[in-house]
Length: 194
Length: 136
Image (cartoon, rainbow over all chains, first blue to last red; front, side, top):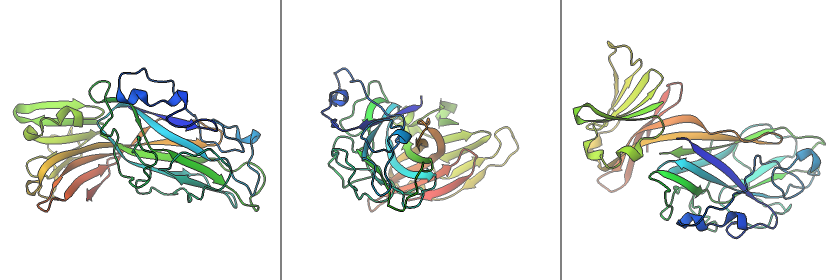
């Protein structure tokens, strides 16, 4: 059975672990899984929202998009998920544009202030996405494995709630960035599944 | 692709997705572990650690290629390496999420050296059948 990845995004007013649609209670077993609010893209804009329509929410040249916070939920049949890597695999920047990324960051309210996370990799990096799903404040280790010790399987080998650490994205522009739409880009996430 | 685990007496376990869960409690009996991709079959022999590669499983006269990388008998706590490296693409601006696809398959073994450090030896096989040997 294949694995399904769900991209969960937290926007202004939501907090991982406390917002009703993302209680973690089901991870320890017994409770009814909450409804998960997932995203279908990681479009950037001048608002904190899921599935932004970029043309309606343009980022002014010289300013930045709102930061976007995600975790990826893995559900399906596996013994472990490890070696998660994220990079920009296609799409050229326009002048002054860049996408910043951190793969293991504590959540903070989305803002347009430059988060200074560093540019996302443009080739396959070493593992750069945290898999310590239960401790988003743990920014030290990157090479952990899902599920971790407290994860329970709904049936042998079948997991439904294992997540990456919190990831943060932000688009940065400068005053020299041209007006109009930027190029479409592809963000790739790879992982080893056993 | 298809995984196969071979045990004494021609016993075999197949799985089209993952196989570690099926064999993790029977490693002492494992004879060889294989990954078949198209007509090619890649196997790791559990008694030596050698890799055996067959280019065309339908060619009964083909002499398999043996790749000797590391003597598995020098390791303790030996475990299989059998993973699917999958990748999902996400588009930025006006497109939706893609489904995960198979990028490569890892097949080999790992265990502890006499000094206690972990040693990994595996083939990283792409869907087109090309492979690289990884030793970590």
